Amino acid sequence: MGSFHQKSPILLPQDLKVSIKECSVVFPSQLETDQKKKSNVLFLTNIDQVLNFSVETLQFFSPHTKFPSHVIIEKMKTTFSKLLVPYELLAGRLKVSHENGRLEIDCNGAGAGFVVASSDYCLDEIGDLVYPNPAFHQLVTKSLAALFKPHDQPLVILQVHFISFVRVFSLSSCSFAS
Image 1 (cartoon, rainbow, N blue to C red):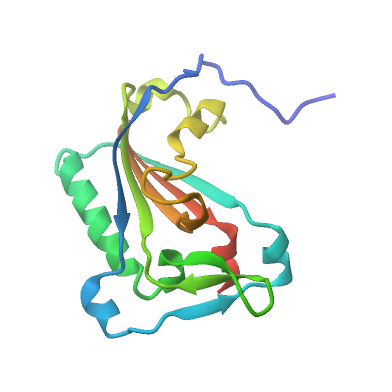
Image 2 (image 1 turned 90 degrees about the vertical axis):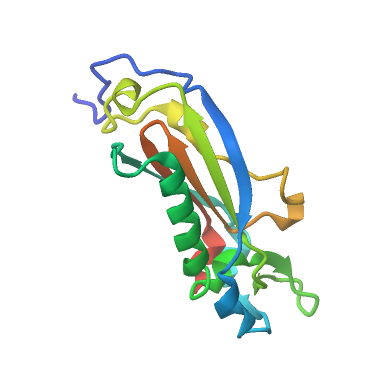
């Protein structure tokens, strides 16, 4: 009987030698958020009360000579800041309602995480991206404990890794509510 699991024809690296270069907070762009002084609270469904996990997505891009790393970082930060205005819940925090004890999202503009990292490998050296490699978990920062208290973690973390160029989203399942 056949198997759905295929092994990669090449040896995949197990240690991607990832080093964090920068961890910061990105806030919604200031001009537009000054106009909205009050913070909204989003009700979470019963399923969101029980299932609270992160969805991690990796997107790999080949390097481009016209876009050096510092340009990519600045463009991503600026765009991310603008994106947090219409999607205000992504810059918010989970909190427990004092009225009913349920989790809810406080759209308070507290900011989202932004991480810049690099690896000693180039994209060609990490293997065929069609085959899952458990080492890819090293590319995902699980929390930003240096920037946020454990109960104040952001709902979304955007990471840029310079293997070639990898964009990683870590998004709380609760942010799917809206």
